[in-house]
Image (cartoon, rainbow, N blue to C red; front, side, top):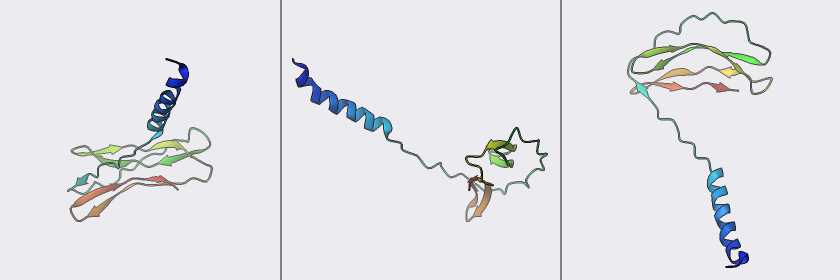
Length: 104
């Protein structure tokens, strides 16, 4: 067969692969409901920043079948004026749900 007979099929196939490769589907994380209230946040000693452009992210309680403390850490700011808004546990009708933090 001649190349020109295969060219349309090849172009369609490559286009299909490119489209599928570029498609990003984000699943919403499954919401975990915890029936017991989280403990009070732990006091942390904040170490010196590793350099300019970092923001301190406070530690928080995580539910792994029991409460586990996730210590605070320094993160690089996405831009100079970015501020970290702390995540927190929210009490709802059936228990406690994590509201994640993020950059503002």
